[in-house]
Image (cartoon, rainbow, N blue to C red; front, top):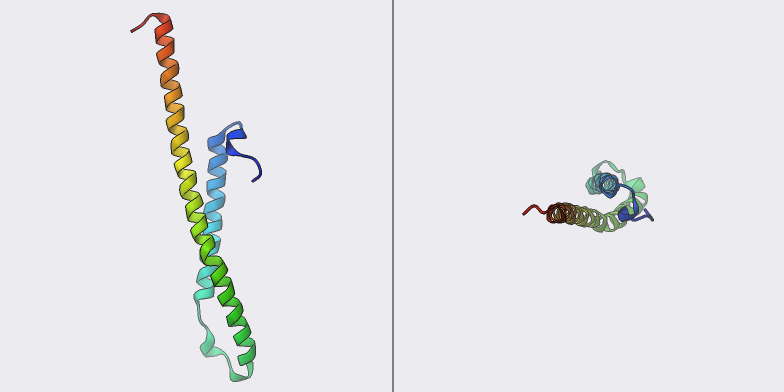
Length: 109
């Protein structure tokens, strides 16, 4: 994670790897949020109410921490997709310019 994709030999491959990791992270966060959303308080006996309150409080804290992570993953994935589009556009422009300068030096057009 400390290396930049631009420093890699094949930046698009590195971006694909990061996109896969982001998708996995987003999936994990979504599963964790789903698990914290379930309320199983009906099956808890009154003798365990104090423990249940602690568990419920902990689950609420986790839910508060996890919600922004899902949003961050989505934003990072969108940014990665935008960067990929810019790279493709830059690469296309470089190829067009190389072809154009080659044609000029050959006296074509």
